[in-house]
Image (cartoon, rainbow, N blue to C red; front, side, top):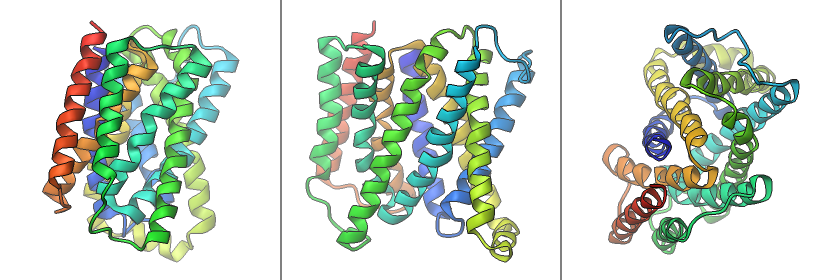
Length: 300
């Protein structure tokens, strides 16, 4: 189930990326992240309540040190990292962003090795090599780049920093997730992290966005439907399945399966954003699919 949830998380995140790219020119990344995380933790806490849990009660086994880790990881992994990711997405576009996403699973595997001592079995390593190698193969010859090269490099760098922060923070909270039994407790972890993840971009928004511009953006009715839908896909379904998948399998396995979001993004970007999928990218998608199957086989 952990592997399945990780794959579903990748799909939902890809759907959200396409939606956020479509509205990225109408709402600044910092405000987009503030609204996304605010709606997200409200939806998660409502879900916990509907399933008979108490979202305002700290689960058993959570220590003061755990609370500190969750707050800091929420600030860095959701508050700061997502702002950087959306900024990068606006610069490089969904297609190239999918290729930049290559760095996520290597970062998680690296941090999981140093922080958790995790190792993969041989067939899973092969699957990971196929997924990562397929993305490298697809990105060797970039064509129709929508931005000048210097700006492209900056956007890629910002995206890599965002992925490093996301990877570090999810590995950091993995021992806390391991102590949580039941979906309600795992969703509580996800929702609690979103609170500081929402507060930080809200505060930044008030400082960096003029009040008149802020009012103009928020009063634009055309952004709210896609924004709410993108939030459901990303902060609600995507992160919920991400957290549950991480709790039910190895961090490194979950990360490699999360990496398939890159290929979902490529496909959806072609359908909804009319971004080109070349034969090279098609071959890469097939190779990545084989890699995902090998990882699933190694977990049985």
